[in-house]
Image 1 (cartoon, rainbow, N blue to C red):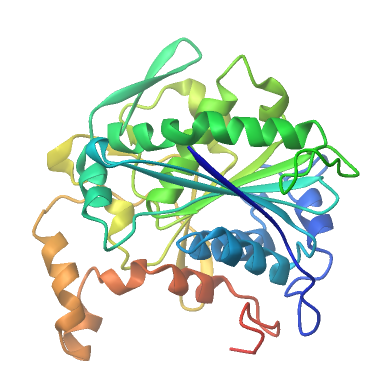
Image 2: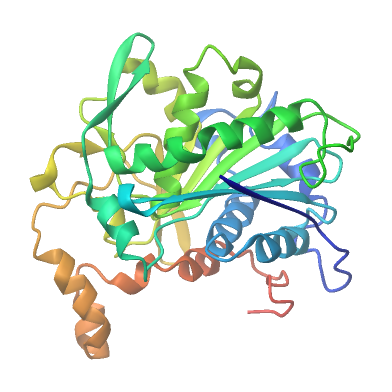
Length: 336
């Protein structure tokens, strides 16, 4: 397992994107905050979507972007494990606020040029996690990738809970961990969900589980097998899934590969706004939609706009753009 560490350098104007970000992350989903559906926070969603998008890069890039967003003295760590023969390509980034009170855990999604990643995505399993004494069926390939780095991530979070810097564990920060957010785009969103489940339903890490504020995912595929035990309902209140209207990935795996389902609150983007969906996106019924969505990138603009699904809508930059607040500088330092 490979671990890299880095502390953010000062950014200066025109950053940060979000003034007082640490305070906002502490207040959202905290004591006294709205619960359930109404608790989704648009600033949190933008920050976590940006982190999830840049998780496809390296620890230097993630550290820089988190500093630009508002974690200006962020302590960052990257935990990675690759076992090609087992289709394991697991990378997790942890960004700790300079004061130590907030940590964002972000999983990298499927890398488009990595065939091993795609083969792992297709390994639906099943496997299972124990939830309150009941077995919860899960996507085997996703679960294996989460487990590959789980103990490394737990060690980093435990260090944060003890008040240590993730950039240099020999150095202490002002405060121990108070608020944990977990996020990811695509496969990264599925790993984020599975890690949250493994954390909340473990008897070994109750201290960490008590710090979990929310799980925000973007273009996340289904990771859980139907039926989902009642014991998962408390976690569902903390999960906020975002999807663009023609992104095919949230409808995967296809029904021909087994019965999968989503959990949590689903938000879809339409007419310039994010709205909560009354029912989750259904599982894909027709396998032919997959090649059509991929081939759509070569179609004319008219045919692309008429298609039910478009692979373009899955790209992380489109989630970031749809969640970007008006009137604020972008992560690039300009105004969109």
